Image 1 (cartoon, helix red, strand yellow):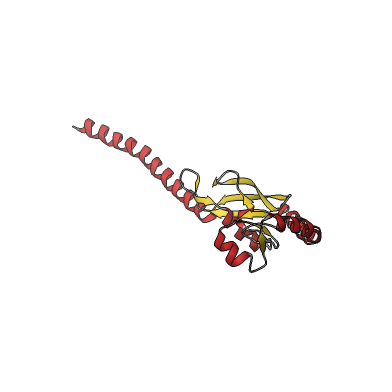
Image 2 (cartoon, rainbow, N blue to C red):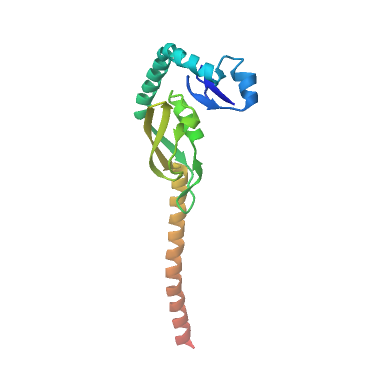
Length: 186
């Protein structure tokens, strides 16, 4: 079922867009709630006339989106993650996680608006884009770092391994001296 949105619906789109929805969602929620009208020829003509009136509403929403985009471009998120022995993360950084982190910094963006080009599976710096409104996109930086507690644990393990390796190198030399002394006395 195709409908024309008369209000911005978070999960579907912006005002004036023609979207395809299930019949139950359209008949039971969107149309009775005045969020959308059926996309037939008469409504399309009416919507064209209505778009002139909606232009002000769309302009306001676009201005809000541009303000969010400007704020978003200045943001750099730093995520602390646990890293495996091979240098890859336990899990992947997702758009849901990024949306939650942005919400903590007073930037409300839906997760579906955030686009991660390549999956974030290792530490490093990434450029992430977000399509906030039709024609309004912003990019922000995400820095993924290793958990400092885990870094300390790894240093301790490496120091312990180095100490064991040093003991192993010294141990054969001591046994050779003992065996040489034993052979001379017999």
